[in-house]
Length: 168
Image (cartoon, rainbow, N blue to C red):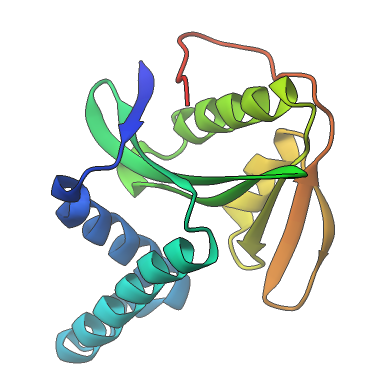
């Protein structure tokens, strides 16, 4: 599978809405909620997530992750003076477990290592799959609370490469 990325464009809004709605549905366990309630709450959550990312990190880079040319996920990175902050990484359920997240993390880590900076991120404590992925990539918990873990990868060595290149 070839993993690549491209800058987000305004035409990506329907895909991002679908992607974020899928992720929030899983996080909230909203699969069984009545449609009227679920649709309204998920719409608000999706909009809040997009606006929150941009307001906290207005100079961040938003990229669409592609798997064999198909839209597979979203990445939002913020280059800060003392770290590369992985603000968002979401992969569609149908693309998970196939190396997409690992390939993206590899490129993020390589970008940080070129500047000799750590990579930091926050992750929901209930997102055990993501936490396991981050730990396999060398991230360790450095703080947080009962809702979010703050994780960091200080090792500036790149992860072993298996296949193509993403180029962030």
